[in-house]
Structures are given as structure tokens and as C-alpha cells.
Length: 571
Image (cartoon, rainbow, N blue to C red; front, side, top):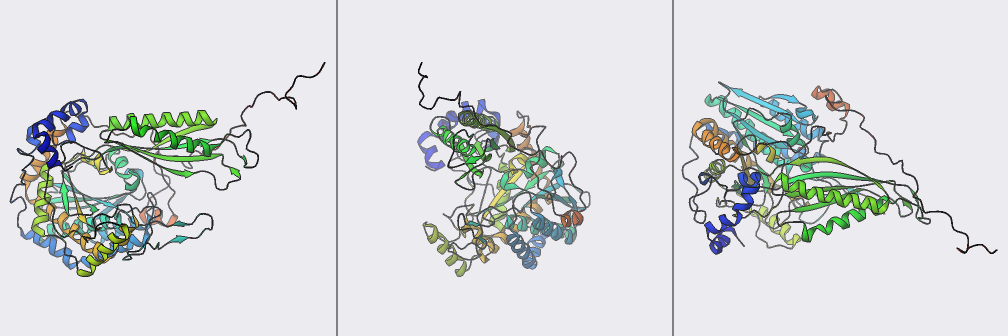
């Protein structure tokens, strides 16, 4: 049911009354909800809401930024495709981060590496005049496991296929489009800097190269370290299946890795073994039983077996399983993860194994900004929708056909700006959320994949370096640059965004979900990367090598030995 249908049935006031007790009880959900308790943050008539007109101002500076992107689109596309080809995993984006930083440096930015203690994170800065206001951009560049795919191919054909007769696998691929995310943002930042110089605009652009968004690590760690302090606004985008913006929320999330340690042995003689593979199997089974009675409609729980038996006749001494627990607020996410931890403890108890867990990440729910979304939407409308060729649309329909969904092609219109749903029903998570509680944040998406195809899929990898992906990516750069020019030239707009931000956060004391003893999940960089970026290893506060997780378990006690016939001796 759509938001409009739901409000039509309940009435806007009824919907507000239905969720008001929840919002009052959970301040984080209240602040992020458009039915929050301050009426100034919501439309007067949520059913017939119309965005305000004339927020996007025509200016020579904006024209200069958009024209710069047109002239330099080839280099922006080149950056997009290089990062797509690297397809590097989270926390090991050595080539991708270097390429993005080099692009920005060549366009007048200064680079500072190792933001927040993470080697592939950096801050690129350009400043002009008074240096105010300070606007942030976000760049990501990590790929996903198993999503390798040939670009422009609408049939599944992994670009990297790892042959193993027992367990073939596919390489990493940009099935979330982070190659485009970083390239468009870098292009927009460079275009805005060029316009600032040409039109003598005051301000500072800070581009944050962020590692490991797919694991929700990079930005949450950097926010806790104070890397994002001093911003007046933050402008972000993500590849999507439509051309839209919103000020809605997202799920908060906890990420934990669980390690079970036991004893090894032979499959042919399994007696007196502490089976770690049984432990991860039992844990996954137990958490499935949470779905009916312990998971609200807003909750999401998913997991991946990361390490267990490699052969049927070898009992592994170590098995690992990795969990995400998502809910509408940090408090609710913690309650859900605590239940998952109890399942892990029960699985260890049942199998006689020892369990360790490690927190990998924790992020808040997203705090949207209505005025910022309205400004972005106005600029998207002003710049215009992406123009896909007939070949692009044929490719999009072919992808939809291979996915078994309706063949509509790529979205080529700007979606209406609508208020968030009256009742939050959960969904994905992002580490941009932690930034959104520090500074007013604008988010936007463009039609980087055809509707009906999944994010985190080979379908998205196929589009991310194809012409259709290039079209959507370049348009994203224009939307980001145009909106940022308005922020630089309209002090009233920045003030209104910050006024709304202050109202929404007045009753919230933000605290990182990462504990003070949090250990960064790092990989040691190659020497060439450290030399080029002039970093030392390990980063400050990081112990290297890390503590090893090694089983020291002994066989379980089966009790006293029995006589051969299990009968008392004859007298």
C-alpha cells in the first residue's frame, strides 16, 4: 500500500496518532520521522504536498559548473571505468582510492591520507575567498564479492571466474555502483571548484574518500574520530533505479562477527569432537526462529558463513559467521543484536565449542533534511532528466528480461518529491547516516540500473561501466554540482537547512555506536601504496599484527569407560 493510500484510509491525523507513542518512546526515530513532534518539519498537507517553487536559482556560476562537467565528461567516465575495473574489496581499495585522490589533486585539491586511521580513506580540500560555507561531498569505491560481470552484457557472464571443481566462485564486482558514486562526486567537486574560481565564489569544498561503505565501517569510524567536523552541509548521492530525492530515514544497524572454536578430527570417526561447523549451523537455525516473534516489520537480520569446513572428512577447529541486525533506531538494533548474541551462546553451549564475537560496525538511522531535499529536487528538475539512447533502453529491457521483471527500461523522468511514508517499515542502512546527525545532509539517486533489477546484483555491475551507467553517473554529477552552487550562493538556504537540523536534533544526544575499545578491521597495505600516500604502518592506536584467534580446546568428556558388554562382572 502506498503512503497516499494509507493516509487516505487512516486520515493524516490518524496516522500521526498511530505512530506518536512509538516516536515519543524512541527519540532517534522521532527526530528522523516526518511525523516528528515539531509541525514545522512536516508539510501542512502531507497528502497533497507540493514542493516549493524557485528554490534552484539560475546563475552564471551554476552554468559554469554544469558546462565544466560537459567538457570533462570523458575524464569523469574514465575515472568511473578505472575504478570499475579495479573492483577492489572493502578496506583494500588501494588502486581505487589512489585514482580518485589523484583526480581531485589534478583539479586543484589538496589531499590528506589516512582519515580516521584507515589507509584508503582521505580528505580532499579546495578553498576560495573566505572559505565559508563548507560543503562536504562523499566518495566511495569498494566492490562486492561474487558480483563480477562483463560490462554491457545482459546475460550473466562473470568477468572473473575462479575455477574450482568443488566450489567455483566469481570475483568482485561493482554491484552497488560505488565506482560511479565516487566518480560522479569527484567530478561534481572539481566542477564546483572550477566555478568558484571562475566566478570568485567564497567557500570550501571537502571531498571525503570513504572506505568500506559496504561493511558500514568507513564513515562511522571517521565521524567518531571527528573527521567530518566543521561542515555547513553535506551533499550525497547513490546509484538507484530512479531519479529522485527524499528526506526519509533508514535502518540503524549492528554488524558482529562470531567465531566458534572447537577440535578437529576425521569425518569417519566423529566421536568426542567439538564441532564448530555444527555451531554455526545451529546459530543460523536459532536466529531463523527469531523472525516470527522477535522481529518487527522494521527489522532485518541476515548473515554469511565466512569460514567453516573445507572438506567433508575434516572437522574445522574454527568456524565463523557474520551477522547484520537492522532496526529503526540504535536502541532497537541493539535489542535485536543482543538476541542474536544469545543464539550464539546457545549454539556454543549445545556443541561444546567456545564462542567469541567482535563488533565490526554500528551505524545510526538516517536523519533526512526536508529543505535540502527540496533544493536538490528543484535542481534536478532545472537540470533535467537523464537522456538514454534507444540502445541504452534496449539494454535495460534485456536486463529486466533476464531478471524476470517488467521490461520498462531505464527511468528517464524526475520522480515527484513526496514526503516520507507515515509509518516507517524498515529497509537498508548506510554509514552516511552517522554524518547526517552531525550536519544537514542531502541525498539523491539517479537511474543507474533499470527498475525491477536488484541492487547488489550482477545486473548492476553490468550497467556500472556501460553507456547507460555513464549517462546516469554524469547526470548525478550535474545535480550535485548545481545544488552545491546554490548552497554557496544562497546563505538563506544553508541557514534554513541548519535551522531544521537543530530542531530535529534538539532532544538527541548523538553517541557513536562504536565502543571506545573498537578495533579497526584493517588489512596491511602494500608497500607501494604506503610510499605513494606517505603513510606509516600501523596507524596510530592500532596493534599489529592483530591477536590471532586460535583454538586451544580439548576433546569433550564422554564419561567413564564402559566394560565391553556394558554388564557388571560375574562373581
